[in-house]
Length: 326
Image (cartoon, rainbow, N blue to C red; front, top):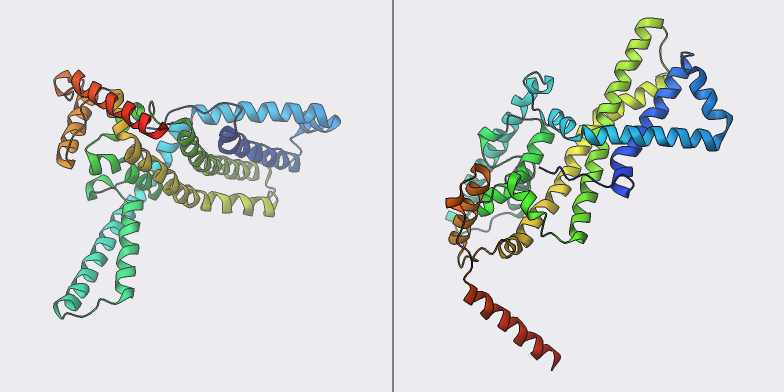
Protein backbone atom coordinates (compact mmCIF):
# COMPACT_ATOMS: atom_id res chain seq x y z
CA UNK A 1 0.00 0.00 0.00
CA UNK A 2 2.71 2.44 0.92
CA UNK A 3 5.34 1.50 -1.64
CA UNK A 4 6.72 4.99 -2.29
CA UNK A 5 10.50 4.79 -1.92
CA UNK A 6 12.08 7.39 0.36
CA UNK A 7 15.13 9.27 -0.80
CA UNK A 8 18.35 7.37 -0.14
CA UNK A 9 20.02 10.22 1.73
CA UNK A 10 17.20 11.81 3.70
CA UNK A 11 16.32 11.70 7.39
CA UNK A 12 13.64 9.02 6.98
CA UNK A 13 16.05 6.64 5.25
CA UNK A 14 18.63 7.24 7.97
CA UNK A 15 16.13 6.48 10.76
CA UNK A 16 14.23 3.64 9.15
CA UNK A 17 16.98 1.73 7.34
CA UNK A 18 20.54 3.02 7.81
CA UNK A 19 20.49 3.21 11.62
CA UNK A 20 19.07 -0.30 12.28
CA UNK A 21 21.59 -1.85 9.90
CA UNK A 22 24.46 0.14 11.44
CA UNK A 23 23.52 -1.06 14.94
CA UNK A 24 23.28 -4.65 13.77
CA UNK A 25 26.56 -4.42 11.83
CA UNK A 26 28.40 -3.05 14.88
CA UNK A 27 26.97 -5.80 17.10
CA UNK A 28 27.92 -8.44 14.50
CA UNK A 29 31.51 -7.18 14.32
CA UNK A 30 31.82 -7.30 18.09
CA UNK A 31 30.35 -10.80 18.17
CA UNK A 32 32.73 -12.06 15.49
CA UNK A 33 35.66 -10.48 17.32
CA UNK A 34 34.70 -12.35 20.49
CA UNK A 35 35.19 -15.60 18.54
CA UNK A 36 38.33 -14.34 16.82
CA UNK A 37 36.63 -14.25 13.45
CA UNK A 38 36.73 -10.53 12.68
CA UNK A 39 40.22 -10.90 11.17
CA UNK A 40 41.26 -8.28 8.64
CA UNK A 41 37.87 -6.52 8.77
CA UNK A 42 38.17 -5.03 12.24
CA UNK A 43 41.92 -4.35 11.84
CA UNK A 44 41.30 -2.40 8.62
CA UNK A 45 38.55 -0.33 10.21
CA UNK A 46 40.70 0.52 13.23
CA UNK A 47 43.91 1.43 11.36
CA UNK A 48 42.54 4.72 10.04
CA UNK A 49 39.37 5.99 11.71
CA UNK A 50 38.43 8.23 8.76
CA UNK A 51 38.89 5.50 6.14
CA UNK A 52 37.43 2.88 8.42
CA UNK A 53 34.43 5.05 9.24
CA UNK A 54 33.87 5.76 5.56
CA UNK A 55 34.00 2.07 4.65
CA UNK A 56 31.67 1.18 7.50
CA UNK A 57 29.27 3.98 6.53
CA UNK A 58 29.13 2.88 2.88
CA UNK A 59 28.61 -0.72 3.96
CA UNK A 60 25.73 0.31 6.24
CA UNK A 61 24.25 2.51 3.51
CA UNK A 62 24.23 -0.46 1.10
CA UNK A 63 22.71 -2.59 3.86
CA UNK A 64 20.05 0.05 4.36
CA UNK A 65 19.22 -0.10 0.65
CA UNK A 66 18.87 -3.88 0.96
CA UNK A 67 16.41 -3.39 3.82
CA UNK A 68 14.54 -0.82 1.74
CA UNK A 69 14.24 -3.20 -1.20
CA UNK A 70 12.91 -5.98 1.05
CA UNK A 71 10.72 -3.62 3.11
CA UNK A 72 7.40 -4.86 1.78
CA UNK A 73 8.34 -8.52 2.27
CA UNK A 74 9.47 -7.88 5.85
CA UNK A 75 6.21 -6.09 6.58
CA UNK A 76 4.19 -8.97 5.14
CA UNK A 77 6.02 -11.49 7.30
CA UNK A 78 5.55 -9.45 10.47
CA UNK A 79 1.89 -8.90 9.59
CA UNK A 80 1.36 -12.65 9.48
CA UNK A 81 0.99 -13.27 5.76
CA UNK A 82 2.41 -16.39 4.13
CA UNK A 83 1.28 -19.98 4.23
CA UNK A 84 4.32 -21.13 6.21
CA UNK A 85 4.62 -18.05 8.42
CA UNK A 86 5.14 -19.36 12.00
CA UNK A 87 3.33 -16.35 13.47
CA UNK A 88 0.08 -17.70 11.98
CA UNK A 89 0.07 -20.30 14.77
CA UNK A 90 -0.85 -17.54 17.22
CA UNK A 91 -3.40 -15.56 15.19
CA UNK A 92 -6.22 -17.19 17.15
CA UNK A 93 -5.14 -15.03 20.08
CA UNK A 94 -6.03 -11.92 18.09
CA UNK A 95 -9.45 -13.30 17.20
CA UNK A 96 -10.04 -14.15 20.85
CA UNK A 97 -8.95 -10.63 21.82
CA UNK A 98 -11.34 -9.13 19.27
CA UNK A 99 -14.30 -11.18 20.54
CA UNK A 100 -13.43 -10.40 24.17
CA UNK A 101 -13.45 -6.66 23.52
CA UNK A 102 -16.81 -6.91 21.77
CA UNK A 103 -18.23 -8.91 24.68
CA UNK A 104 -16.97 -6.24 27.08
CA UNK A 105 -18.74 -3.56 25.03
CA UNK A 106 -22.01 -5.54 25.17
CA UNK A 107 -21.75 -5.94 28.95
CA UNK A 108 -21.08 -2.24 29.43
CA UNK A 109 -24.00 -1.36 27.12
CA UNK A 110 -26.32 -3.47 29.30
CA UNK A 111 -25.11 -1.71 32.46
CA UNK A 112 -25.45 1.72 30.87
CA UNK A 113 -28.96 0.87 29.66
CA UNK A 114 -30.00 0.04 33.24
CA UNK A 115 -28.96 3.51 34.39
CA UNK A 116 -30.74 5.17 31.49
CA UNK A 117 -33.95 3.19 32.03
CA UNK A 118 -33.91 4.24 35.68
CA UNK A 119 -33.36 7.89 34.63
CA UNK A 120 -30.08 7.92 36.50
CA UNK A 121 -26.80 9.48 35.47
CA UNK A 122 -24.38 7.00 33.93
CA UNK A 123 -21.19 6.76 36.04
CA UNK A 124 -18.20 8.40 34.43
CA UNK A 125 -16.10 5.26 34.96
CA UNK A 126 -18.44 3.21 32.74
CA UNK A 127 -18.34 5.80 29.96
CA UNK A 128 -14.55 6.07 30.16
CA UNK A 129 -14.06 2.30 30.12
CA UNK A 130 -16.37 1.90 27.13
CA UNK A 131 -14.61 4.68 25.22
CA UNK A 132 -11.19 3.12 25.85
CA UNK A 133 -12.37 -0.25 24.56
CA UNK A 134 -13.94 1.32 21.47
CA UNK A 135 -10.72 3.19 20.72
CA UNK A 136 -8.71 -0.02 21.12
CA UNK A 137 -11.03 -1.81 18.69
CA UNK A 138 -10.69 0.97 16.13
CA UNK A 139 -6.91 1.21 16.42
CA UNK A 140 -6.07 -2.50 16.62
CA UNK A 141 -8.65 -4.27 14.46
CA UNK A 142 -10.48 -3.89 11.14
CA UNK A 143 -14.24 -3.58 11.11
CA UNK A 144 -15.12 -7.28 10.70
CA UNK A 145 -14.13 -10.47 12.47
CA UNK A 146 -13.27 -12.29 9.24
CA UNK A 147 -10.59 -9.70 8.42
CA UNK A 148 -8.42 -10.28 11.48
CA UNK A 149 -6.54 -13.62 11.13
CA UNK A 150 -3.25 -11.70 11.43
CA UNK A 151 -0.66 -10.69 14.04
CA UNK A 152 -1.25 -7.61 16.28
CA UNK A 153 0.98 -5.60 13.95
CA UNK A 154 -0.87 -6.83 10.86
CA UNK A 155 -4.29 -6.07 12.31
CA UNK A 156 -3.20 -2.57 13.29
CA UNK A 157 -2.17 -1.89 9.70
CA UNK A 158 -5.36 -3.45 8.37
CA UNK A 159 -7.39 -1.31 10.77
CA UNK A 160 -6.36 1.94 9.07
CA UNK A 161 -6.25 0.36 5.61
CA UNK A 162 -9.99 -0.41 5.87
CA UNK A 163 -10.82 3.05 7.23
CA UNK A 164 -11.56 4.83 3.89
CA UNK A 165 -13.63 1.86 2.69
CA UNK A 166 -15.76 1.87 5.84
CA UNK A 167 -16.12 5.64 6.07
CA UNK A 168 -16.39 6.66 2.42
CA UNK A 169 -16.60 3.53 0.24
CA UNK A 170 -13.11 4.14 -1.17
CA UNK A 171 -10.84 1.12 -1.62
CA UNK A 172 -7.64 2.08 0.15
CA UNK A 173 -4.93 0.05 -1.60
CA UNK A 174 -5.50 1.36 -5.12
CA UNK A 175 -7.08 4.57 -3.87
CA UNK A 176 -3.96 5.53 -1.93
CA UNK A 177 -1.75 5.72 -5.01
CA UNK A 178 -4.25 8.15 -6.54
CA UNK A 179 -4.57 10.20 -3.36
CA UNK A 180 -0.79 10.59 -3.11
CA UNK A 181 -0.90 12.68 -6.29
CA UNK A 182 -2.87 15.45 -4.56
CA UNK A 183 -1.47 15.35 -1.00
CA UNK A 184 0.72 18.42 -0.32
CA UNK A 185 4.41 17.71 0.19
CA UNK A 186 4.36 19.00 3.79
CA UNK A 187 1.70 16.50 4.80
CA UNK A 188 3.40 13.71 2.87
CA UNK A 189 6.55 14.42 4.86
CA UNK A 190 4.57 13.91 8.07
CA UNK A 191 3.31 10.54 6.79
CA UNK A 192 6.78 9.46 5.68
CA UNK A 193 8.28 10.54 8.99
CA UNK A 194 5.74 8.50 10.95
CA UNK A 195 6.35 5.46 8.75
CA UNK A 196 10.14 5.79 9.17
CA UNK A 197 9.75 5.16 12.89
CA UNK A 198 7.77 2.00 12.15
CA UNK A 199 10.43 0.94 9.63
CA UNK A 200 13.09 1.34 12.33
CA UNK A 201 11.47 -1.20 14.66
CA UNK A 202 10.44 -3.60 11.89
CA UNK A 203 14.00 -3.73 10.56
CA UNK A 204 15.45 -3.93 14.06
CA UNK A 205 13.25 -6.96 14.76
CA UNK A 206 14.51 -8.94 11.78
CA UNK A 207 18.13 -7.90 12.28
CA UNK A 208 17.92 -8.92 15.95
CA UNK A 209 16.49 -12.25 14.87
CA UNK A 210 19.47 -12.75 12.55
CA UNK A 211 21.85 -11.88 15.39
CA UNK A 212 20.20 -14.37 17.75
CA UNK A 213 20.38 -17.13 15.14
CA UNK A 214 24.00 -16.22 14.40
CA UNK A 215 24.91 -16.28 18.11
CA UNK A 216 23.32 -19.69 18.59
CA UNK A 217 25.11 -21.00 15.49
CA UNK A 218 28.49 -19.79 16.76
CA UNK A 219 27.81 -21.34 20.14
CA UNK A 220 26.90 -24.62 18.45
CA UNK A 221 30.15 -24.61 16.47
CA UNK A 222 32.64 -23.36 19.06
CA UNK A 223 30.85 -24.32 22.31
CA UNK A 224 31.65 -20.87 23.69
CA UNK A 225 28.88 -18.65 25.00
CA UNK A 226 28.60 -15.21 23.36
CA UNK A 227 28.82 -12.16 25.65
CA UNK A 228 25.80 -12.44 27.93
CA UNK A 229 25.11 -8.71 28.02
CA UNK A 230 25.00 -8.53 24.23
CA UNK A 231 22.71 -11.53 23.99
CA UNK A 232 20.35 -10.08 26.61
CA UNK A 233 20.13 -6.73 24.79
CA UNK A 234 19.46 -8.40 21.43
CA UNK A 235 16.77 -10.66 22.90
CA UNK A 236 15.08 -7.70 24.62
CA UNK A 237 15.04 -5.79 21.31
CA UNK A 238 13.69 -8.88 19.56
CA UNK A 239 10.83 -9.12 22.07
CA UNK A 240 9.82 -5.45 22.25
CA UNK A 241 10.25 -4.55 18.55
CA UNK A 242 6.87 -5.89 17.31
CA UNK A 243 5.05 -4.08 20.11
CA UNK A 244 6.88 -0.81 19.43
CA UNK A 245 6.21 -1.15 15.70
CA UNK A 246 2.50 -1.73 16.37
CA UNK A 247 2.18 1.30 18.67
CA UNK A 248 3.93 3.59 16.20
CA UNK A 249 1.83 2.17 13.36
CA UNK A 250 -1.22 3.63 15.13
CA UNK A 251 0.30 7.12 14.82
CA UNK A 252 1.25 6.46 11.20
CA UNK A 253 -2.30 5.29 10.55
CA UNK A 254 -3.74 8.49 12.00
CA UNK A 255 -1.87 10.50 9.37
CA UNK A 256 -3.05 8.16 6.61
CA UNK A 257 -6.67 8.38 7.76
CA UNK A 258 -6.33 12.16 7.98
CA UNK A 259 -5.15 12.25 4.37
CA UNK A 260 -8.34 10.51 3.22
CA UNK A 261 -10.49 12.78 5.42
CA UNK A 262 -8.96 16.04 4.22
CA UNK A 263 -7.85 15.49 0.62
CA UNK A 264 -10.40 13.10 -0.91
CA UNK A 265 -12.41 15.95 -2.46
CA UNK A 266 -9.23 17.41 -3.87
CA UNK A 267 -8.78 14.05 -5.61
CA UNK A 268 -12.31 14.29 -7.03
CA UNK A 269 -11.57 17.76 -8.37
CA UNK A 270 -8.30 16.57 -9.95
CA UNK A 271 -10.17 13.74 -11.65
CA UNK A 272 -12.87 16.19 -12.82
CA UNK A 273 -15.50 14.07 -11.09
CA UNK A 274 -18.66 15.82 -9.98
CA UNK A 275 -18.74 16.48 -6.24
CA UNK A 276 -21.57 14.65 -4.44
CA UNK A 277 -24.07 16.68 -2.45
CA UNK A 278 -24.90 14.14 0.27
CA UNK A 279 -22.93 11.55 2.26
CA UNK A 280 -24.95 8.79 0.63
CA UNK A 281 -24.08 10.07 -2.82
CA UNK A 282 -20.43 10.39 -1.84
CA UNK A 283 -20.31 6.76 -0.70
CA UNK A 284 -21.73 5.67 -4.06
CA UNK A 285 -19.24 7.83 -5.96
CA UNK A 286 -16.24 6.33 -4.19
CA UNK A 287 -17.68 2.84 -4.38
CA UNK A 288 -18.09 3.12 -8.15
CA UNK A 289 -14.66 4.72 -8.52
CA UNK A 290 -13.08 1.89 -6.52
CA UNK A 291 -14.73 -0.75 -8.68
CA UNK A 292 -13.56 1.07 -11.80
CA UNK A 293 -9.88 1.24 -10.82
CA UNK A 294 -9.66 -2.19 -9.15
CA UNK A 295 -11.47 -4.20 -11.81
CA UNK A 296 -10.74 -1.92 -14.81
CA UNK A 297 -14.41 -1.16 -15.44
CA UNK A 298 -14.72 2.18 -17.27
CA UNK A 299 -18.52 2.03 -17.10
CA UNK A 300 -18.26 2.48 -13.31
CA UNK A 301 -16.25 5.71 -13.48
CA UNK A 302 -18.37 8.45 -11.85
CA UNK A 303 -19.85 11.27 -13.89
CA UNK A 304 -17.58 14.14 -14.91
CA UNK A 305 -18.20 17.73 -13.92
CA UNK A 306 -20.17 19.88 -16.34
CA UNK A 307 -18.09 22.64 -17.87
CA UNK A 308 -20.73 25.18 -16.96
CA UNK A 309 -20.46 24.35 -13.26
CA UNK A 310 -16.69 24.70 -13.50
CA UNK A 311 -17.01 28.20 -14.93
CA UNK A 312 -19.53 29.19 -12.25
CA UNK A 313 -17.21 27.96 -9.50
CA UNK A 314 -14.24 29.76 -11.06
CA UNK A 315 -16.24 33.01 -11.21
CA UNK A 316 -17.17 32.62 -7.54
CA UNK A 317 -13.53 32.21 -6.62
CA UNK A 318 -12.58 35.32 -8.60
CA UNK A 319 -15.34 37.35 -6.92
CA UNK A 320 -14.25 36.21 -3.47
CA UNK A 321 -10.66 37.15 -4.25
CA UNK A 322 -11.71 40.62 -5.39
CA UNK A 323 -13.71 41.15 -2.18
CA UNK A 324 -10.71 40.08 -0.15
CA UNK A 325 -8.47 42.67 -1.84
CA UNK A 326 -11.01 45.50 -1.47
